[in-house]
Structure formats: C-alpha cells, structure tokens
Length: 172
Image 1 (cartoon, rainbow, N blue to C red):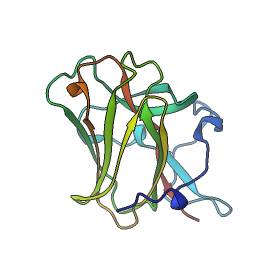
Image 2: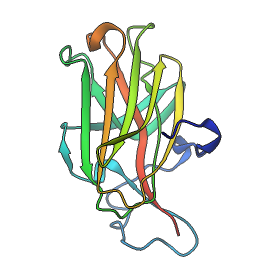
Image 3: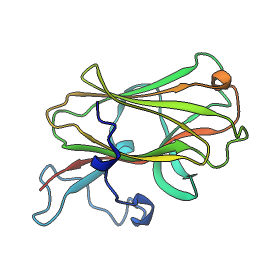
Image 4: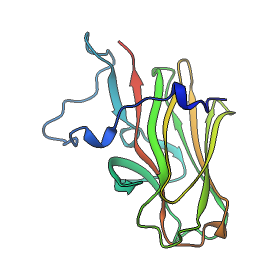
C-alpha cells in the first residue's frame, strides 16, 4: 500500500492556474519534452458513481477541479465510490485529499481509499483541518476506483469529502 508521506508529492495544485476551455488545448497522448503532462480526472468519463467537480477549500487551501461527494444528500450507504477506465496510459494519480473547510461537523472523519484494478493500494483516515498529498503510481493500470467511507456520522452531516485538484500524470 502507498501510505508513506516521504513518497508523496509536494506540489501545491492550488497554485496552478485554473484551466479554461478556450485557453487550453485538448490533452495530447504524448507528454511535452520538458515536463509531465497532467489531465484533471473530471476530463475522463466515470464508469460509476456520478462524480461532481468544483473548487473547494481543504485545510485552508482552495483546490480547483476537485472531485467531491455531497454528504448532505448521502446518508445511506455510508460509502461512495467513483470508478474510471484510465486505459493503462498514466503514471501517477495526484490529489490533496481531505474534508471541505465548510463542513458543519468538526468531528467528522472519513477514510479515503484508492483501488487499482480491484486491489486496494492506499487508504487514509482524515478529519476536518487535515489533508494528505496523494501520489499513487498507476503505471499499467486499467481501472481506477476512488472510495470514501464515512467513519463518523455515517455520512449524514453537512460537508464535502474532497479529492483536491485530482489529476492523472504522464511522466516525460
């Protein structure tokens, strides 16, 4: 399992300029020669979970293009999953995960998990005012599944669980 803080990226996605449809070219299948190519997960059609994306604050930092679950609408079941076909074309999954600063419940805890081709490779429990820089290798992976399980309140409290600026990366 990937859960070693020493192996995580120190990139602060909130400092990246926001993407706009008019200004940004379509994603290319080949990375630029002098740096990694990134694609926000919102640009890939999900296979399940009906994900939502927007800019949200986590632990005092705003993250653009963030995947989130609206727990005000999800009291049962206590877990939400989002699955994607990433076609064995990426090298890394990166995000900053946590609970939105706008959560009404200061005691809320959520477990975030990542599955690659059906195998759990990462999990971390987080509460309000906590975040974690996710950096998971996804080389040669076909299916990516992101899961969030409500540890306290079974998901019936107001607030979002956030995969901040979640994106896939191809190394040069």
